[in-house]
Each structure stands twice: as C-alpha cells, then as structure tokens.
Length: 184
Image 1 (cartoon, rainbow, N blue to C red):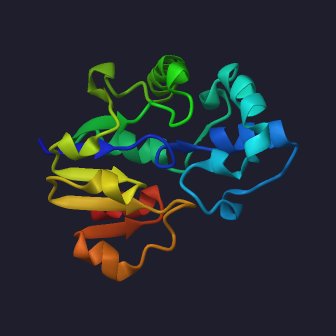
Image 2 (image 1 turned 45 degrees about the horizontal axis):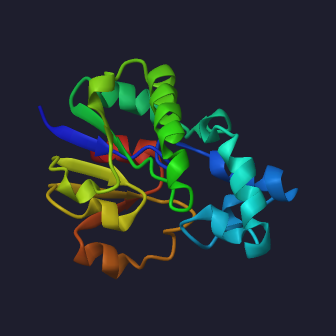
C-alpha cells in the first residue's frame, strides 16, 4: 500500500491563527490580505509582547475549520493508501508554548479524523526526512525529499510561486481536495 504524507495546517484545516490575530487586533483581515507565511508578522512590533501573552492563553484549533471536502476525500483515500499526517508544532516566536500546541493538534486530529490512527500522526518541523510515495503540503520546502508525487496545496502564502519553479521541483499545484482525489 502506498504511503501519503499530508500536512495539517492550511491543507486539512485553517482559520485558527488568523481568527486569533483578528481578535487580538480588532481587525477583519482575510487570508487574501496576508502576504507572508507567518500570519503573526502583521502584528506591529510594539504589540508583540501583549500578543505573546494573549496567544499563550489560546488554542488555535478551537478556531479552525476543516477545509471543504478534506474529511470525505481523506476517508476515501484511507481505504487505498496509508495516510500519515505530518505537521509542525513548534511556534517560531513562542517555542515554550509548543508543547500545548502539540497537544491541541493531537486532539484536533483525533476528534476530527476518527478514521485515522493516532499512530500515523507525525509531529516534526523537518518533513524532508519523511520518505513517502506522495506528499501533500502548502509549503514548497516541505515537499523536498523522496516522493513520486508532490502536491502543493494552494494557500494564501504560496499563490505567487510560478509554475516554472514548481516544475523544477517536480511539484503539481492543487487548489482543493477534489483535485487531489482526481490525481490520486
């Protein structure tokens, strides 16, 4: 049975981080307004200590929602493939909070994808070391390494990567879970 590595954030679920930033700033940013991989980069530097305190009391995944068709397609794919959820849990600016984030990610996956065994959750920031037949991620660098198919899931931060660059890396862009199902 072939193995698929699937990223979690911005591939299976999204919205949590942006929701918290909007709560904190009292804004109404949409994903389209964000031009950086790290959503928190839009927070003014002078507010960062206050943001850090606010963020440490929150669970990003209480604010998340499943992306359309992700549940149904993953459930169908799980009958034909070994699916591994590979997700980073270390926060760039708040490493001490990362243990809570790992717990929150685990619980989100456990409750929202009950057909996947927790033995197939991989918590790592270096996905290049994972050798799977198929990799699905929203970050181009996470698709590095061995895989016969590499699928870049379109997200707010990767829309401007040119097709030529994707082709150089052997990567296929996908915009939704129905496209993924059609390819696989």
